[in-house]
Amino acid sequence: MQINRFTIRVYGIMLNQQQELLLVHEKMPHLAFTKFPGGGLEFGEGTRECLKREFMEETGLEVEVKEHIYTTDFFQPSAFKNGDQLIAVYYRVEPISDIRLLSLNEKQIHFNGKTETLRFFWKSIENFDVNVLTFPIDQLVARNLLAINKP
Image (tube, rainbow, N blue to C red; front, side):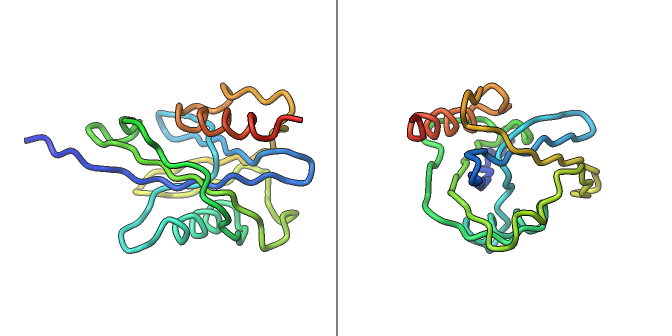
């Protein structure tokens, strides 16, 4: 019997004073991808709590979660869990802690017995290519952001 579940992921859109978006390139043992910072909702937490936790765990930054930007409104199978449907929620975030504390060096985290390598970087919204993002929902959100932020 196949069990279909929902996977809920929460992502933060951070734009600095130089009009650059914060992105993360993640390497797993058999997969590499580039996305907005964030991660999976854990049982018992809300989406805003999840995003604050993920930013602290991955970047060391304390963030304030601002307005809701987008929630998936189409079917998207999970890239990581066969048979799951992905629901992604995006918010704008602003750093509370000093953004200069953000390390842009590679960082290794251990999750579910696996080691992942994270590398955070800034990408200017001027001439931003949505194809730098791996996943279709991130690309859609980036296109929407670029349409709003055009001069």
